[in-house]
Image 1 (tube, rainbow, N blue to C red):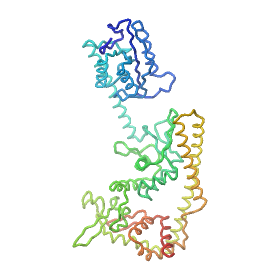
Image 2: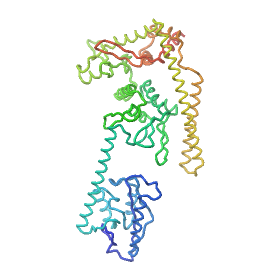
Image 3: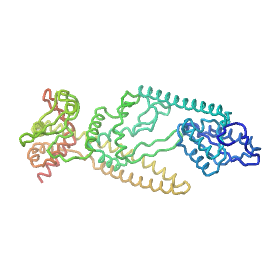
Image 4: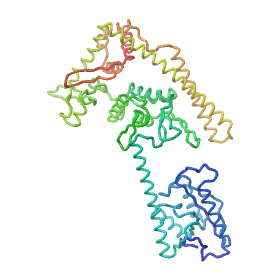
Length: 525
């Protein structure tokens, strides 16, 4: 049988004394069950071998090479075994292709037509073990096209039902699969996420790091210095996916993932999830706003040319969006303003705050810091909060030491397994990689222990803070614009301005007051 004939019967024109080299092609759309001792691919091949054996009197022999595509869809031709089969056909190593069913070769009419065209050009016979028709006649070709049409229709219907099912599950807040994220594990029973206690402590710390640095690259450097990695997880089949050092892209994906707030994202809409949140919603929104703001300048730290010391810190209380620095020039004089993003983008009537004079609100913030020194109770309360933050840092160090110790133990066990395995190039590369990770982990543990043993690095004496706040004004006046901006960012976390009432709400960084003490010490030394 040549010229694209498809039949269960031997090819009529084949001479009995001619050898026909037969290749069996098998395919399964998913990898489910492929780890079993006898799976669907084995069953398809066994049927093909039996059929070839029944045609031995016609000179049919089985090619020992296997062409098995397990876990590959029939919707396209991007399948390694199929490409290898076509290459062997082009090299004249195959005379006949045997499949269990036509749709095992392809579920796409267009792809099947291309494959059959290749077979006809090369004079390759094509046999389906379970389907009987002859493509040398018009009725046979019609039958084949009808079968393929139904195969393609079935594939598209399955895909559509799967998408509908996943969409419905997403809207109900269910986990529908994919790569697990740092901080959560997949419930062994499936269908939902459960909190990983150790990792769940790292994720809020990463968000806090970004809020402090306000840029991705410094956070990536710090995370890699600490030896923190992306999610480590093991598949159902037991394959281990090791955590990788953070990159700018992987950090961005983590910081923008709404799953940490207990929600799931489906086509741009957020739905309440079944899993508990591990990041505060307000912190996530603040990070999201900062990331969107950075996207306007590519995350670069632009030069503060006009002394906008509240750039990136000032928010509109009326609508919750940021306020950006701008200016106008009238009669050669520059007037600076902070403008609400909502009013700027949607029109002046979209927000009651609209804008505020930059110098006016900047002076008000500096005056508020200056007046902190006039009340001893404020200094005492600030020192207390700094002490609490220092205690919290010690607890973070202890937690990280515990996690780093576990990670070192895991790496050492993995290294022992690799050393015991048979030698090859991949093994040598993996050993070197593991040894490098262990060295980095040991360095990080030493740093953590040194910081922990040093006690409370951010501790501030009440008397020292009181003196620094009293001397704030002369120190402030001695700083240049860039230094003033850095000091403000160290002390203040957020400034909210309500244009309806003129109210200014300032959120201070407790640990940032250490910066005032340090600046005061440098100025007086």
